[in-house]
Image (cartoon, rainbow, N blue to C red; front, side, top):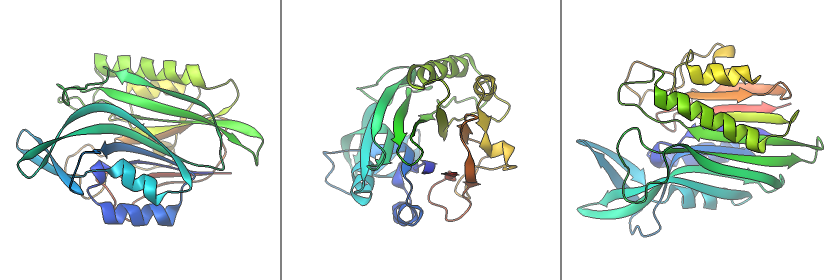
Length: 267
């Protein structure tokens, strides 16, 4: 089984992204920052916030779903706000998407918020709502189940240090894990956590026996050249002791987002 986690950056580098997905061919794809805009007439829209403008692939969820025709597709919106098509506002949903090759049957699923709740009337004030999605899959080749879960951690305007919101988010994530994972089964947890390696979030996950693969394998950067700020950590992948990794990589090339992908091949 091959698992890929990536903050898709709203599909801004769409041509590179879709080519990379075809090349990598993951069995489970966990995407964060995914757009879903059924009413859009254009392929591209613009996100505007305090003078910043960011191109967004209008229907990234639909486009990736079409490209991965052999996969089941799940979209988990965190909020519904406005994107711009020229001078016109278009309501758009934004959140997580998970794609699973149909050879792996889904035998359990959980989706809930780790911070806030669904925002239906705008993106909301910071820190904005965040959710997590987990799937319990059956692996026929090994005759056992595996749970794969990902999260997009909340963004605090003050930075990536520990805050009361982040501590509450970590507790909510632990609760979700406990609700879906069966004792002794494999667990892979991943996503854009928006925290630093020494964070209380990662310490709490270590306390339940998870190993964080990014720093454990000596990586010191999960961002690409498109990211200009100093803190270069954001994305993590953690595994339970039952998981045997054949290969793990924080993908440097190609650059398909302002985040690097996290690629895990299971033994």
